Image 1: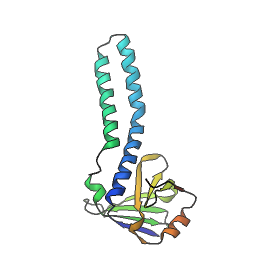
Image 2 (image 1 turned 90 degrees about the vertical axis):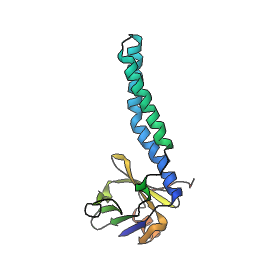
Image 3 (image 1 turned 90 degrees about the horizontal axis):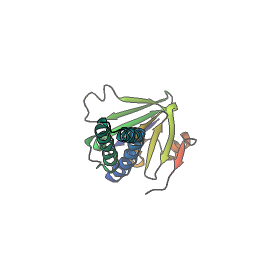
Image 4 (image 1 turned 45 degrees about the vertical axis):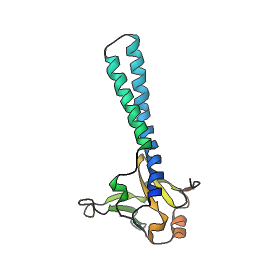
Length: 165
């Protein structure tokens, strides 16, 4: 069993927010491309819907840019959290202090659904299969049960080491 507990450092929140913004923007990319194609087709035929679709596409582009460069001031990122890896039960539970009913209904994920764990030096980004936008950040300094070496050994086939930026 491994337990990470505490609040993430501001530096880690900033690094992870940019990466998460990029993921959300990639999800929106097909809609933006589709909007541009439809706008071009409608524009060629001078159909009035052209302006509306073009406007929606521009709004999607602006939202994507905002997601990439958004400030990580969300209070949810700053709340203390407890992330528990229960190896025997194949479960990960994520509890955030200060959120209503969170300890009654903690978020759970299956360990076998982990696609990869990216090691950024001071923290891990845990990405799950089929869900690129929902990931977990575990700061190494917040590990209170288990050791980093044990964690690395338990997930050695899933860990990808990235340079710290």
